[in-house]
Length: 289
Image (cartoon, rainbow, N blue to C red; front, side, top):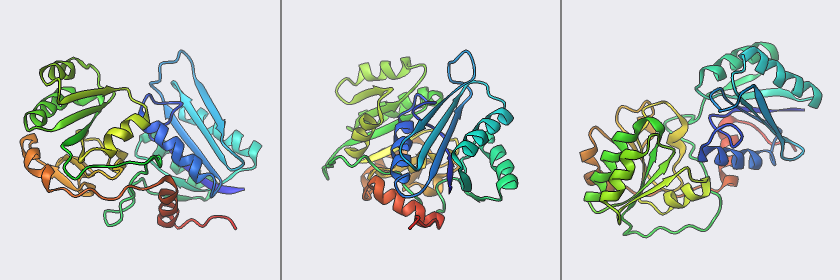
C-alpha cells in the first residue's frame, strides 16, 4: 500500500500546543482520501525515557509521535519496522523545516526512492492556509478584536504590543503558551477590559478567538508553519520573519500596527475537507479510485 508520510511540527501526543490538535484533524480528514502516516517528534517532551504513541484512525490513517531523546537512527528503524508490519510503502514525504525531518527525508529518499515534497506553504503565489473545524463562525465588519499568537520566547515583546493595541481601543486576545507569563499578566491587569489571556488553550478555543478577530498577529521570527494559521483572519507579522512574503501585512515597528490593521480585508476560511482537496491538488497527488 503506497501513501504519504507527513513529518509534523506539532501533534497532540508530542506537543503541548493547540496546533497539534489542528494537525490531528487535518490528518484524519486526509486519511479518508489516501493512505497517510503522520510522524512527530519532541525530544524535549518531559519524559524520563524514550517513548512513543501510535494511533490508528481508520484503515488508511496512522500517526506515531515520539517523545524524549531518541537517536534519529533508532527513530528511523522503529518507523520502518511498523511500515513493514503494515505493508506500507512511502511514496511521498511532506517535509517540515526541523533538522531531524531533513535528515530522515534524505535517508528515506535514498532507501525508498520516494518523492520529497517541500515544507508548507508551497509557494508565495498559492499559499495553503490551514482550515477551521467547521463550526459556524461570524465576524462583525466593525469588530475591534485581534488575536496575538505568542510563543515562549516573545513574552516581553508580546506584552508591549498587547498594551499598545489596547491603548488603540482594540480588544486583544493573547493566545499561546508563553513562559514566563508575568509580563503579560501585568499588562492584562492594566487593561482588564481590553486585554484577555488565553494561555494553553485547546485548538477550538484558539480558533474561536481567531475566527472572531479582525487579524491574527504573530511575533515569532522562526521559519515555522505559523503563517498557515489564518482561519479567515488576515495574518500579520514582523518584516523580519523569514516567511513575511506570505503575510497579508508586515510591520517594522509595533507602532505601525494601529494604522495597518484597519486596512486589512479578511479572506474566507477553509473547511478541513476543502483544505485536503487543495493540499492534494498542490502536491499533485491523486486519491485512489
